[in-house]
Image (cartoon, rainbow, N blue to C red; front, side, top):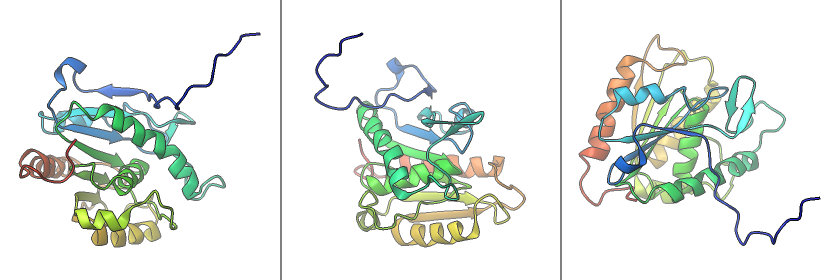
Length: 231
């Protein structure tokens, strides 16, 4: 039998699998962009976006914690029996703590999520409204909070953080009810830039990436000093 020592004084910070666009020695002082992939994907899925984004950013792509078929999931789908707001919060609380642990060397932190990853990015923004320079959501949704205190929407409305939301109106993956909720949430709590991309489907287009690049340049690289979301 292996003996165990005393219980740790605090829970260790979650250490996810990640891919980085530059070595640790070159990250200090750069703005950080954190990527969150969609359902049944992994950290490699979005990393190719880094080539289309402003080179000033350090980009890190994070693997979700739960194995799901050939990929990974952040939390159960809303139609699954295991879904609840508590399940979402339980999954994202360690992620928020991990972001706290890595943000210090960077001039700012921004978030980008695709599909379920947009639910992750927007939920983290709502949890820590003053922590992020800007957020990008692609073909995804925001999580209905059902009154959970993790989601600080009233405080977020006072911050007016820039939020880019790109989607195709014909995207059949995200339900119309979730789109309607996300639109109500985004218009009431963020400084929203919403763009529709016909024929894109549930994906990311070259035109959308060009717009995301412009958005990040405007809201982070060219933002007035002292703006929202410092480190």
